[in-house]
Length: 115
Length: 109
Image (cartoon, rainbow over all chains, first blue to last red; front, side, top):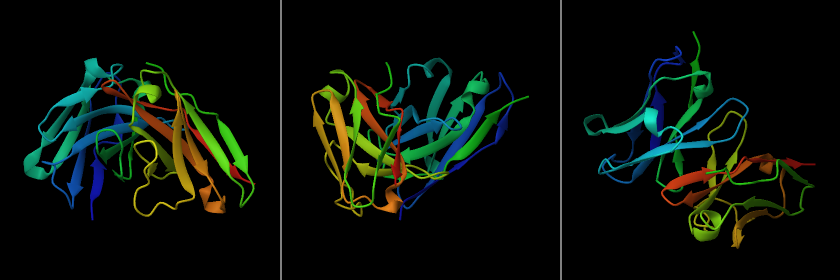
């Protein structure tokens, strides 16, 4: 049974870096594409980007200058780092398996950007 | 790139059929076979209902169906049930990127 679980700080200060990890169980990070998606409170879904099993990445153009996705193969995890955050980055962040459609999702983690 | 266009709301009575549209351009919906639909209940992760325009994952009732005509994709829910009340989102490949629709709140009257 494939399971994904997001982890990381729930509160980040403006201008700092938001860091999240997604731990995958029941599957190998060395297969498939892995995606991050976010949802601001009360709003719709926004694609953040994906990383392939080879480490190739594709980012949302609106976030590209601040975003880094990476694989942590030894821990069967993939991670997200978003620099210079503002209140507009406050959202529930989901990780998911796949590049263009997502059958398996994490439960989501709320990250609030506030001083 | 703009988000895909969905109606903000849709509704139907139990047993009826409802269709939700998702309109894009020839650069995304019109030119892609990778259109998906997601159901999201409050405070839950989205659930994949349709992928590659018309395909249903195992376990999704055949009351849910997808189609596409030109730059508009559609999700049809037949035989509406109370548990179908949720937000629905479409997504599409757009070149190298992924676009989402703004979401449609489906109400079962």
